[in-house]
Structure formats: structure tokens, C-alpha cells
Length: 267
Image (cartoon, rainbow, N blue to C red; front, side):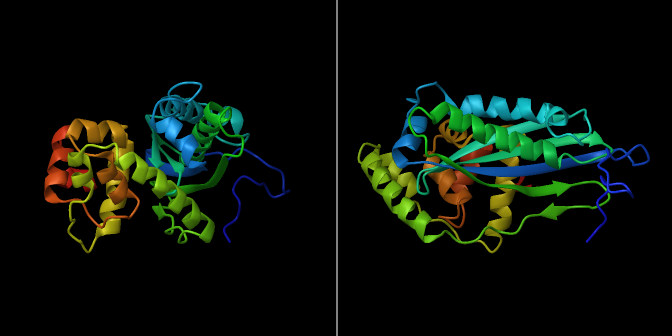
């Protein structure tokens, strides 16, 4: 195990002196999962939550938290953060909201804690916005997804374990809610979700690339899908592994809506 740099030779905590380090571009992405009942998530998706737009407020809270990390975590350095993006992705099948926070800085130390703080405060804000509807909301799986830059180089978290039996039960309950919603959906929207998709060999790489693209540009699945003229289920199905790839037509529509090429979606 590497020596803990924030502990001195006497075992006392200290703020690490980073003045001798090179100033480089450093990025980090963190994730938090907020699990709730299907009917609670339905309030979020339908814009009927008691306190207003849950996802919009959570995004702003996460950005504010990233900028105040040094005030909250005692041994963190105040950093001139150059960019913070918080994306909140509802998953109707698993009845949860996945929070992804991405932070960037040109500095002498990394922004892992800023990303983790942003994700955790955004998740707490979701709870606060929804606690009137459900007190039993669970915040879980706060973790660092990736980091780049600095002496230690790049880090990528391992893929999470498969869904537990409890998650499968929740998924079945949420799927019933989705089927009821589908009956009210337009035929074109359902057909879009049912479109066969090509099975690429680098699906996981593309999925992670698309997540980073959305986080870097502050894109939400709902708004992006609307701009592209697609069902939001197309994006969610791919991001959460229920489909192996987007069709060429879907990729082109998403790229056109974002003003980039298809290749840029996965970089």
C-alpha cells in the first residue's frame, strides 16, 4: 500500500504541500445512485414533484458543492475549477436516478473529491426534493468512476456487480409501470424503442464514451432525445446496457442535435 501523503511522520493529519508538482489538466468523474419507488420516480419524470424540478435543482446543487469542496473536506486544497458538469439520469427499469458528476481543473492536484462531493450533494438534493413523497429513498453506490492526469495517471472503476435479486424485483415492478406508460405513448415512440440495433464489439467503450460526452456538454437524456426527435428510451436503453448499440440513424440524429459528428459522440 502507498504511503498516505496527508499523514506526517508523527501520524498527524496535514494538508499536502503540492507546490512542487507540475500544473497539468486533471479530470474526474463520480457517480451516485438514488433508489426510490416507481411511483416516486414517476413524479420526477412527470414534473409533479412537490418542490418543483428535481433534476434541475440537483444539478445546480452538485455544481455549487464542487466549488465548495475545500470548505467541507478539511484537508482538500481550494482549486480554481475550470469546469463542472452534473448529469442526472432516471432509470425507469431499476427505479432509480443515477447522478454523474464530472470536474476539470488545470492545477497541481486532482479533483476526485470535487467530483465525489458534487455527486453526493446532488443525490442529497434529490432526496430533499422528494422526501415529502417518500422518506425511504436510499442513496447508494457513491464511487469514483474515472480520473485522468497527475502523477498517478488514469483510473477506471471496475464494472459494477450484476443486479441483485432485490433489484430484479424492483425492475419488474418498474417495468409494469413502463408498460402502463407505453399504452399512452405514441406509436412512433414505441417503434423507435423497438428498432433492432447492431451488436458492436466495443459496446462498453462506446457506452462510456457517450456518458463522458453527455457529462462534458451538460446534456440530459430527456432534452437531447427531444432535440433529436427520438424517444428518451433509445438513450437510456443504450446507456444502461439493455441494447448493445444505437442504430446508425439514431446516432446521426443525436449527432446532428448536438452539432457534432457521430465519431465525436464516443470520444
